[in-house]
Amino acid sequence: MTVNDTSGRFYFNQRPNAGPGVDPIIHNWNASTGYLNVNAFSQPDFGSFGNLGRNSIYGPGYKNLDFSITKQTQFAEHLGLQVRAEFFNIFNHPNFAQPNHNVDPGISGGELTQTPDVAQTNPGLGGGGPRVIQLGLKLLF
Image (cartoon, rainbow, N blue to C red; front, side, top):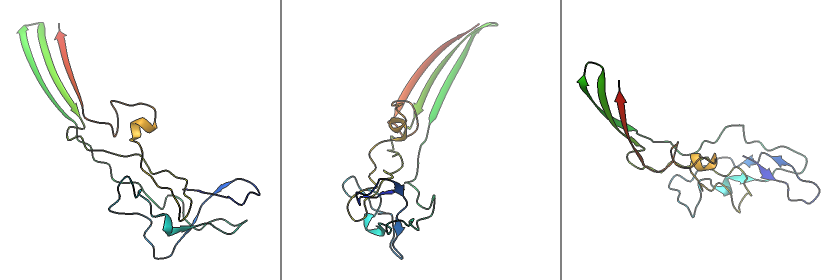
C-alpha cells in the first residue's frame, strides 16, 4: 500500500503511517465504503518513510468450490464414450481482487472494484469470476 506525496515538490510513492489502535479494515464493507478504513492512515512527514509494515494488510477471503461429474460408457473392448459436466465457482461467490493499493489518508482508497481474473485481463474462466459451466464429450478408442 502506498500514499502519494502531494506537496508538489516531487512525486514518489511511499508507505503511510498506520494510526495506533485504529483497525485499517472495514469488516462490514460494501462497494460504497471500500475495504480499507482511510482514517486509519496518515501522510508521513516530508522526507520520512511511513511506519506501515510490508504485507501487513490482507485483502478479503477467497472462497471457491469447483464440481465435476463424469460418466464413462464402454461400447466395445476398444471403444468408449465419456460425458463430463464441470462447474467452476458452483455457488457463484464473488471473490474480489486485492484493494486499490494507493490511499489518500482520510479521503479515498482501498476500493474493491474487480475480480482477480479481470485484474489480470483474463475474464471468464479463472479465479474469482462468475459461475462457469463446461460440458465435454470424449470418444475413447
